[in-house]
Image (cartoon, rainbow, N blue to C red; front, top):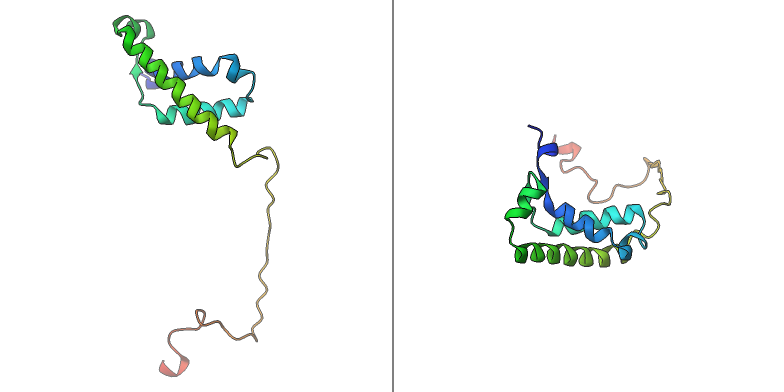
Length: 122
């Protein structure tokens, strides 16, 4: 048995259905859609199943409607996080600053740099 093949989270299917709507698929980039999916799924309780058809045939319609509402609400909440993303320039290169500390041996040590034991106590 391979869990990734034989078992899946049905909530991924429902979140995917929401994200496939033009409201999301036409207004968000691929990266943003992936972020939306991750953020939405993190809010939802997973429903692990083996076969969709078996699961849906045994699931009451009211419960399916509830699960779809959960998925929609999770995506709506995730949407606000993606729109208000603090990382606006995600595609920009992150600057890397290298610094080489220059030590001057003649400068007096700060109080926190001074050894606890002085040379006289040794």
